Length: 244
Image (tube, rainbow, N blue to C red):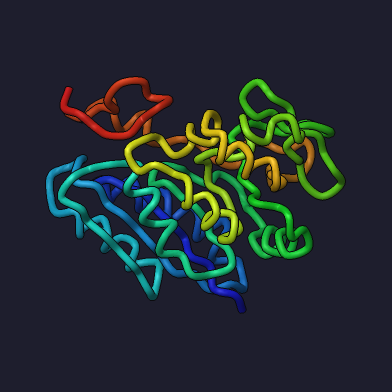
């Protein structure tokens, strides 16, 4: 059985992470024949208490947890660190504020990745899918008979996203050669020529049945409303937190 590293970027909000992990174990990981290890970075912002309390939530679900609790918060550093610690053929990238709302066949996702060696990732849909297309923001990915595939002309613009995704570790390692830790990792795929060139060499997809509801929901937006923290600057280019 292959081992899969679940890479998690988080802040100090253990109850939110608990909700995220519970949903993924109940509807995805716990139904799989694969083995999982957690790689988590907990940045020092969020709720009162030690960051290790958030790490302890991972220990409730994973037998092995690789963790880091830095003294300075940086989303870019967190992202690069968790990816750099992955040693398995595939990564499941999971930020701490996504809830899985329906059952996902994780073994099927692995099989698709193994059968398509130039497929960089399959992400879960945050939007409902139609019979022949899956909406990704203002772009529509066509159904290719197995999954919804990103059109080649959109690979640099929308191929990679921070949504929960099964990622080929080889692709992640190639991306790490170019990612700058001080900038938003997702947005760098859109404007850096080296990362755009890399994206053009790979295929990207959305894993879902046709005509199905969204599979994930962002639960971090409600959490942040009552917090003394906010994402600094343009949220689309988020790199760090600041006090309100």
